[in-house]
Image (cartoon, rainbow, N blue to C red):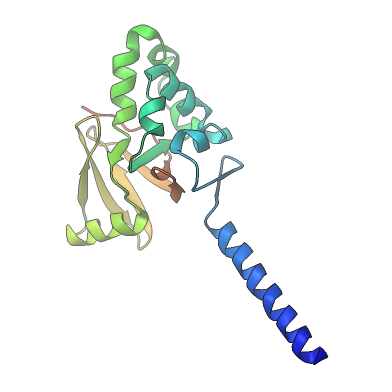
Length: 186
């Protein structure tokens, strides 16, 4: 009887530990913080130390409500480093009230309606013989390709190529992929 109780207790603990691991697997770390699938895109992004510039830009562009909306949305989120790669003074200029329309255009170019996980993007790329395009909320297109067997890269309308550095950060209203460049529409 003691063996059966010990086995049952051990089995219960193993299942509990397995459940805890499964729960941890769905939480992705971005910018040193956990990104919780139960929170919206903005609710998670504000906690990422790597996306403070993006969050400030989203606020300046008046897009907080849109990115907190029902979705689903797929956001290709440039890091602070990506914004720092822009010519000096660009970000400071874009967040000025008089440049709100331009900032809005750039930021909505990083958003696609729908839930495009890395698996979905790979399927589209394979179906398109190595290339896929998606229409952004801004109205332009982003082109996706494989760089090797696993890495997905994307090209903007100006020909700039960005790597997706963190995939499939699930959100309550979509998914975020972290990118290493700020993408630019025509």
